[in-house]
Length: 557
Ligand SMILES: Cc1cc2nc3c(=O)[nH]c(=O)nc-3n(C[C@H](O)[C@H](O)[C@H](O)COP(=O)(O)OP(=O)(O)OC[C@H]3O[C@@H](n4cnc5c(N)ncnc54)[C@H](O)[C@@H]3O)c2cc1C
Picture 1 (cartoon, rainbow, N blue to C red):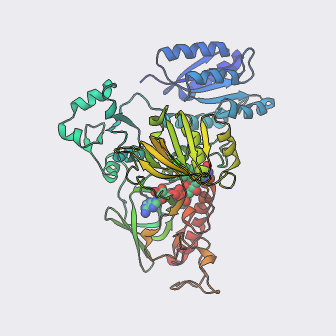
Picture 2 (cartoon, rainbow, N blue to C red):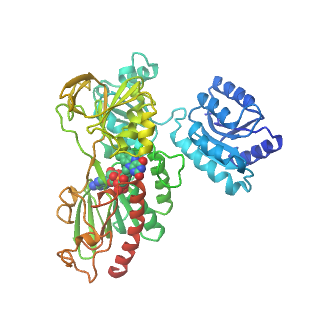
Picture 3 (tube, rainbow, N blue to C red):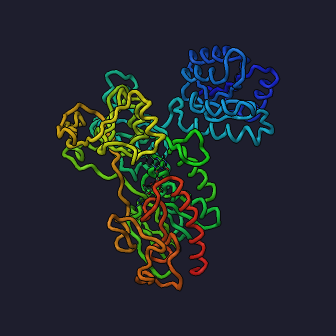
């Protein structure tokens, strides 16, 4: 594949040469560096690149240029290359304009001139943006292919698993074989049995997996499904923000750390199409990006990430044994439960049967492309539903939010309410709930009950995304740790009853702030009783818990 382009535009020839020199020095092996002395000349280059089917990864553009400002140039450039990352070069006096441009032109970053030394002020910023770009940009395809039917739950699960684990794949919908020559060619190569047993995953080494389980797939795409050691200082169950933070802090402070995750690192946050309130990311970032960065960080410190489900814990003296769904067992001194929450199921006739075939829990970003030009229904009135509606509004003809309450104020952040109101193809229906889903092989219509008129309307629908709150993942812990009536785990002072320590407690101290009623078993994030359900609080708890783990280990080891 031809190298993607980095385009820089500046009207000052000397500055332009300096940027070009710095860009070439670091990126010449992987990218083509092109330059232009004006916005008009820059656009000319872009049109030419488009005709040749070349790819642009990043724009580095001066804001203050005669004729066309940097922001004006970007507004036109992103029509041609919407996925390219955008960096604005500004003088100190122009920072207000640059901050405004974060919204106007979707600028990812602004750099204040001069940027010397580039090692400190230029390359780290560009490295991160280019990494993000590379992870989301589908290059000319050479990897895994998934052949299946859009309405098949099994196909959806495979796509979702690969996407959330950042394994690139190409989706081939058999239903399009009439119109898509590539799909037709692949289908023609299959044996009859394979055609009958879709989905089929075709690996780059030629291996073909018919209807693979997630565990088989994980193994084949190179995810680690077994722990390499039998004993760890710290085992973490759950790889959401809380588990990942604990993993990074634990391993960076010298603990032999394993993190067991049954789906994909990132947890719920990994499903978020845009997290706008996480400190340090003024223009927001996708949950996928956050998860990918955290995984890189965890791996760098030596965290072992195992793709498996924890199904049981048992105690033996100072050892905690964790049983995995694949039958393996690993042991540790400290165990940290960070299993978060999962979507509450919508109970209405037809919903369960059609889940994965037009009905999805969560934003199911893997399905967004398939909704292009269609009507999409989103059930829920909290932030996650709002984010999903904003995300789908980029693809769908119309997004209808079905909200049970009579307003959004109590459940959704104001910034999201403002965004929804300003998006013309998003429509919010209050006092509405889905009471039935219809369709034979896939969703074809839903019945919506309005509590004000008490009427039930049946409307055609192909896609329904449900986000109606969440319940904790704690059944697998059996009776070992104390929970509230909804299943959230108690910790620290909440375990003390009438000044007494929990039953069976063996240490001569009270349970630590994030410790459960079992010494050495800690709990962090959304699964903890009383937690604040936010990315930042999960990350905070995950990192703080490590100091309690150290305290505990100093007495048992
Ligand atoms: C769509 C969406 C958008 C959101 N947007 C925002 C936002 O903009 N800002 C914000 O602050 N918060 C947001 N949140 C909330 C935020 O994502 C959560 O508060 C946060 O992810 C909680 O982190 P956690 O690590 O506690 O749990 P989770 O993120 O729930 O992660 C738990 C992990 O544990 C794994 N797991 C569960 N059981 C097992 C088991 N038995 N074995 C192995 N693994 C297991 C799960 O697969 C999961 O990956 C959003 C949530 C959603 C769903």
